Length: 201
Image (cartoon, rainbow, N blue to C red; front, side):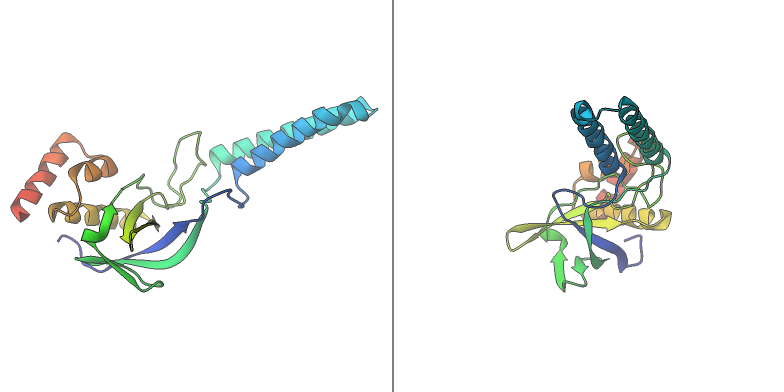
């Protein structure tokens, strides 16, 4: 093992359904709905200047929200905090729920976009800055899957989680393609990782 355990991260569970938080995408949807409502009701409003003024205000609001989303917005995932998650050499603990999982219990150790908080995403589909909650695990518990997102606050957290992934691959607990796609390794790095696993095996 290359890292000193235990390693702690803040953990979250996805809520599912509509995200009630005030996000850029929700504001954009509101602007579009207001525009459609005004167009629907414009026949019943005798003064066309009122319609033009309202339409202009909605358009400026839409533009302002779009600029905010592309250049300033931080992700607001629809997640609920469940306290801390602790990684040990042979197990994972959800501290607040007093649950312990051995690595053999993990049905999927998926490494999503490993981004620390406030890192620029540079993708028009997403808000400008990451919330650091993209990485997640799927754990098996009484034949039910438990999906846990991790918050990576800074580059140290990102490197710590990458080390966990490398350690677990070297121990034979997770597959190479999981580490390869999650860490975005080049050919030389993949060969080095394979060599480390062979030495430990």
